[in-house]
Amino acid sequence: MTAADRADTAVPRRLDLGRLPWWALCLLLGVVLAASCLALGFRLPYWRNADQDLVLAYHGLLLNDGLPQEYFDHPGYLYFLVVAGWYRLLHALGLLEVARLSDLPPLADAVAYDAAWQQLVQAGRGLSILLCAGFVMVVATLARFILEDRLIGFLSGLAVAFAMGVMTQARQMRTDLLSGIFAGLALLLAILAVRRRPGAGPLGLLTLAGGCASLAMASKVQAIFPLLATPAITVVFGRSWREPAPGGWGRAALLALLAAAALVPAVELLRFGIEGSGRALYPYRPVGGGLSGVYQGIIAGWVVLGVLAHAAVWRLRPAWAAQALAAVALGAAVGLLSLLIRWHEQNAIAVANFIEHMFVFTTWRHPGELQAEGQVLSGSLVGLLLEGLWRTFAIRTVVLHPDRIPQTLIVEWFAIAGALVAWRRGDRLMPLRVALLLGAAWGLETLFSLRGFQRAYAIYTDPLAVLAAALVLVRFRGILDGVRSRRWLFGGMALYVALAHVWPVVFELRRGDPRPHCEWIPVYMKQVEGFPFCQR
Image 1 (tube, rainbow, N blue to C red):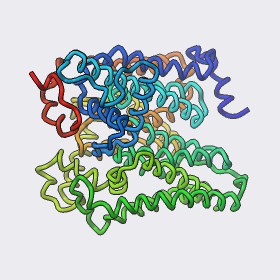
Image 2 (cartoon, rainbow, N blue to C red):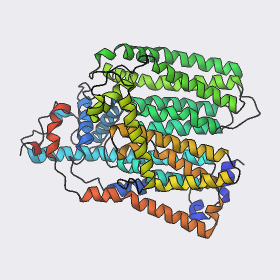
Image 3 (cartoon, one colour):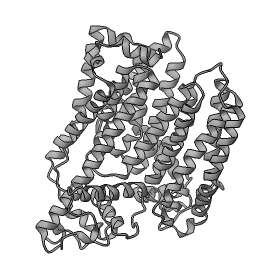
Image 4 (cartoon, rainbow, N blue to C red):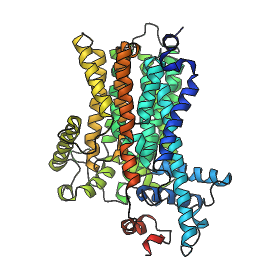
């Protein structure tokens, strides 16, 4: 019997969850998330989240008409493919009247025009709900096997479902959604892989992790930051195994050949993008320090170093390290080749030059500090990052930054308290894991502050905080056994879920004004006639 099986049978009566099959528990997570989103946010007017709802819905129609992509800010590529396919599916099922730009009713018929856009945006919100529900189910399942505990896996899924990032993403259409999902899956798949005995299964997980990493970048290049944390985090989650990895150097050679076959065109794509930086829609600035066109290789070296460090720390065979490297490279290369499905050079340029690309939009956010800078790395950028770091820690005190407090602070405080208790009892590994997870989350929040405090960005950081809290539950299982401690835990979860609905309720009650959107709509939606609210 495996450890996961023993954990399943060890908690059959807690919350009566043991009486339900795992698929039913996962379905329950999806249902409660969907119910929350359908009750709050789904029926809002189509223009309430116009940036990005209207732009992304527009691009689904655009691609379905065979027209080229126009929006490359993130660059958004993968999301556009998915939403276009979603619209085609709903149209084929008779659930969506308009699936192409040419099918839109004329602007002169304002009632029909508004109705078409309302249906399109609600269809997109429905897709977001399904994607978030699926993400939560997969997170719960992966957490179950990583932590080898059924109940804690379920609670982890519940915490992610009502975390700030998922709660925000499930109520609108955003390119961060797919990017955050794939970045989170890349981390969890890699952790699960290093927790398993070396073999074909973990190699498959590492291949999937590499593929998810590339797909995350194809939707929003901001995903590079959580992806960079993955190699370091996986090192501390490893295990030692006495048995040698099956397959040895023969399997490593075979995987290396497969990886090479995918890497050749993938590297050519990156080379094309780097050399084409001068053709970008936006004026790229050099990174500085001679890093332009070079940092991509440094990041690849960071991944290699992570795999080698993991093998060295946990005393794994060199053949296994070679197999793992080839598996990650294979997945990453295949994921990158997804850019060829609907080719546009601007997507390749954005993905290949992600630092320069992100800096363009950072200068828009901070024109006074950054517009005069001739390169990315500068004292002004460091100053903004220090301000973001202060804000990140101020939020954790509540008192110093009482505005927009995320509900995930509850799980962060719980994780910190548990790590401190474990440290005092002589445990060093669990506090190290918690510190690395929370440190990565806070670092990401600091970086994301360059684009302002956006709740949707938390989809990148929430899984880190939840996993840190779950580690405490695994370490102190008595919390789930004692009546009093269980009441405190479930009371905290109830407060967590209640706080998750404060902002959706506030947003539901607010009266919005669509007219400010009329300034940017002609720029980002060139093929539409306009909107009735802009004609008034």
